[in-house]
Image (tube, rainbow, N blue to C red; front, top):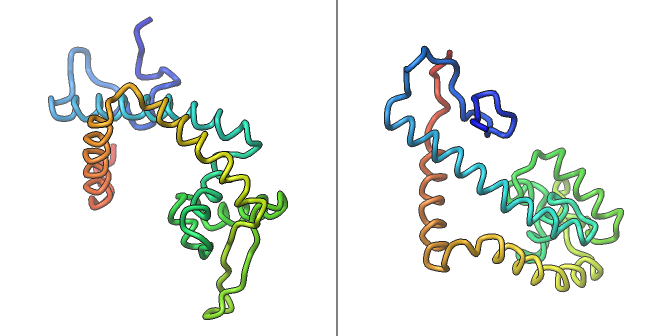
Amino acid sequence: MKRTPSTPDRPAGAHTGSRAAGQRPPRAEEGALKLWVVLSRAQAAIARHTEADVARSGLTLGEFAVLEALYHKGPLLLGEIQRKVLVSSGGVTYLVDRLEDKGLVERQDCPEDRRARYAALTPAGEVLLRRIFPLHARSIARAVSGLTRAEQAQATALLRRLGTAAEALPPSSDAP
C-alpha cells in the first residue's frame, strides 16, 4: 500500500501541505523530510521496546525517567528534573506525586531556598532502580543493536550536532 500524506502514522510535520501535480519539494527539503520520517520511525520503534521494558516494572516512561535521573544524579530540585526529563513543571509535580505515593521518591526541603524542593529516591526506590536499570540498559542495547558500537557512537555524535543546531535556530516564520 502506498503511503499518502494523510497516512495516520506519518510523523507530525512530515507533510508540508498539498502540491500541484508533479511538483516536488526542492532536493534539500526532500532530504530533510526523509531524515525526519526515518528519524521519527526509528525513535518510535525503539520507544516501543523501552515502554514495554518499563511497564514490566509497573512504571510509566515518565516515572522511570524521574527515577533514573535521581538514581544517576542524586537528589535534584524539581526544576532540574523538569529540564532533564523534558516535561512541564506541572508534569514533574504529577510524576513526583505518583512516585511518592508508590514510596519510591520523597521530597526534601532545600536549605538555601524555602520555596524550592528536592526529590530524592527512598531506600525502596534505590533498591528498585538497582534491580531494574541493568535490565533496562540491556533492553535498549538490544533495540539499537542494528548498528555496531562504532555506528552508534557516530549516530550519537551526528544527532547531538543536529539537535544542537536545531535548538539554536529561531522558530520558522514561514506561515502557510
